[in-house]
Length: 249
Image (cartoon, rainbow, N blue to C red; front, side, top):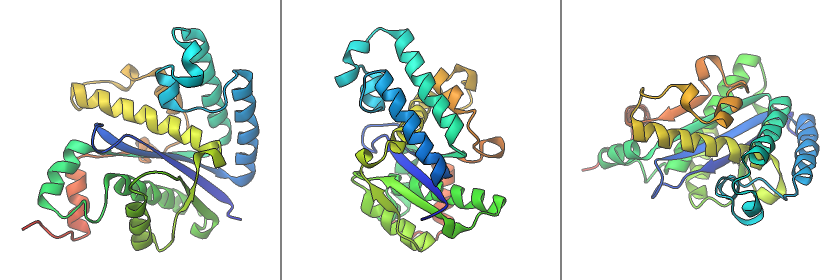
């Protein structure tokens, strides 16, 4: 068994969202065991079976009766975020801005090689590997687990095998509640990117973002946020040039 497990989930769809986000957390296996007990206790205490951010945010399904109960909603999310803070070692996020992706894809053969989900996924893996190198953690001691079900899973698998010479592990969200924490982080970044896209880059201060994202910011994510990244048109084009993607004729 790997000494460290990193769990990734995605948020956003390339056809109807401002961004496609992949996010996750890393911890030692024994810490994830404690996390699962803490997380499941919290869900039971609030009478729900899982955290699904889209259902929670819009008061759907088992969260329907919570609509308008701001105190309960806030306390629930605070409890879950505190569990993540206690158990996770580090967080990783990468967002691909879809307007930039489309512009670059007009010039380079990008979508044939890396779908937005794959581009975000390999960027996150690269962040994990650099984090591990800084701490002297062996690359072979890390297992990469992705929530199964994304339609561009094949593109991610191909990109990971090509760039890193291993195959990621895919599990259903029901197989581990840890994916629910990654879903929370990915969803919050999706909303933040949507807000920044609407107002324009550099207009909003971090203090104007949602309180839940500000709380998640307390979880380590590198010097100057280096493990929370955004791929805009400029950085996507740089990726294409560095990897010698062919230009479209």
